[in-house]
Length: 237
Image (cartoon, rainbow, N blue to C red; front, side, top):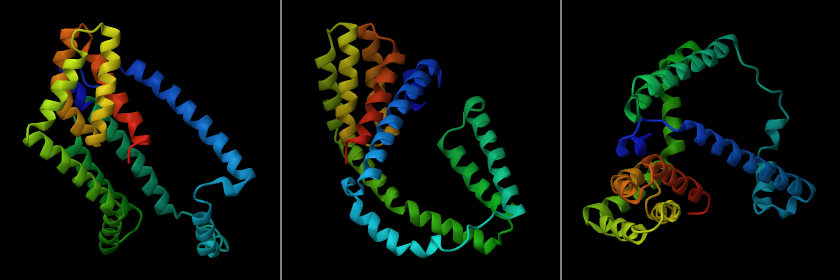
């Protein structure tokens, strides 16, 4: 969405092709994971985390000895309210132009309302928020460090030089080669900027006009960004 907005094309347009890509990639991933799971199920020692799993099984074995907890009526109502909030979220994003700030505010509001509906006290809701913050703290630190790299490269005018140099390599090629080149550029830049929104902010203001020069649609340039940003997260640290 951000990449399309920066490229001056309708947000969430071209969704048909993206849905097809999503289904294909998801199907391949499911088949891969299921085959791997069957292999490890037959011979657990093949798993690279076999020792860790064995330790955790011993540590949490007592949990399985107790009867499973059942949701109360109020908790079930709380789950129903969550679905209502997600409907509001989809409506806001697709029709009202909501983005990060609005979605974050909605999630905070949802947490408080669902907590009250589920029968939690104000103190318990606050403690739950604190526990949630603890879980994502390491991720927040990693994102901050990743963003700091981008800030140094941007403010030092290093990233402009990198992107311009990579774009110059693509310039003058046929549209087909240009698209593959754009994808390769996004793959390389994603190693430096792991944030999808950060990568869009840095690359799309250059890639969109470059697409016009090369006779490639801006929608295609956005798709090259999306795939270049998506697949590489599986491999990059």
